[in-house]
Image 1: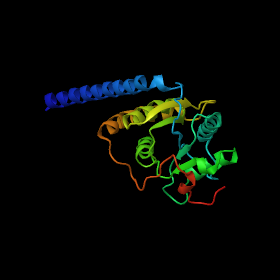
Image 2: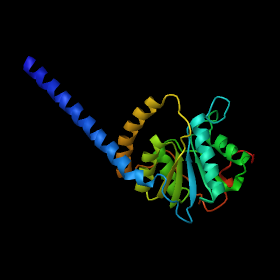
Image 3: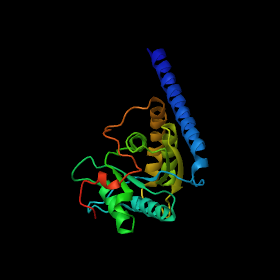
Image 4: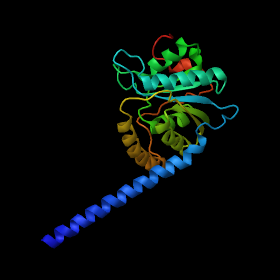
Length: 223
């Protein structure tokens, strides 16, 4: 009995070590595959800027992390980086709405409402990129998020056929970053396989080409 128990322990340890090594290799692969696109020159005629949701406060205003993403996106838009913005986030419940908060922020800072599309079902980074390609018909984009998250976002976008470059939005430190870094390492492994298998998102729906009028995605009056 003791011999079998010892063998089981050795197997479990070996399996855990192999899994950890595989996860480390996948993380390194995603980082190395994407780092050259961070800060790269934005091609002419890029379709849009994609802003990934990052939570809203109980009063509905953007969290500091989301606010920094939005500020960067507005600056990019005003500089002529792309003619449209996709605000992608979680609006799966009536009492939780990232995307209208995101659009409101940009409109209040001078971005025309019709140039802002809302992706109400951007429940994850993978789903955002899948829907950007299939629903909004995006072929090229500037992705805006924090650096720790950017590698995975770019990797998924490219795997799904979007020619993407990244712009980091890290003007300050954020509480809880160690936890986010650990969570991101696990998410890279998950999305490495998702990028191969390419499962459908939670919701698809009718196409809404980003070349059109963003107000068709409004579910509330224009701000």
